[in-house]
Structures are given as C-alpha cells and as structure tokens.
Amino acid sequence: MNVLAGGLEHQGVLIGLLDRPGRPIYDPVADAAFVARLKERLDDPARVHEVDLHLYTPEFARVAVDEFVRLFERSQAQAVALAG
Image (cartoon, rainbow, N blue to C red; front, side, top):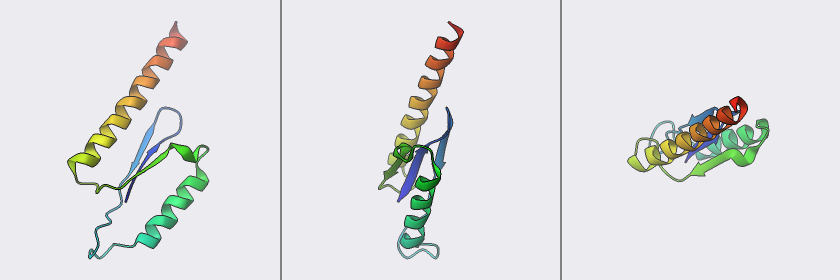
C-alpha cells in the first residue's frame, strides 16, 4: 500500500511504503498503524488517498503527478484570487 496525502495548505505529502511481500521490511500491520496514526494527526483525514499501487511503478507516478498538478493549480488559482 502507498499513501498519497494532500498536505497542509498547498503542500502535498507523498509517503511511499515499500510493501512487497517477502521483503525484509514488509509489515502490513505496521503500515496500517502508520496510516491510522497519520489520519489521526491530520486536520482533514479525508485528504489521505490510499492507493493499491507500489511506489516504483508508472501507475503510482501518474497518481502522484496528478495530485501534485491538482494541488498546484488550486494554489495558483488562490494566489490569483488573493492578488485580484
């Protein structure tokens, strides 16, 4: 599992968990505890998007880039509105 979290304000936080079975650091219980704690600590836990993709894949890269573009465009629109 990997987690893509829209961060505070206009920042995006990307958290990749190396979670392939058979790897020395594979620990789905610890991963789930981490995600639960992350959601507890965020003002808006709905901004956490869990995706069933591995970090080092084109599919995960596409999701991460799309989220970055969405956050960037929103921040640009807010900046224009404030300057306007």
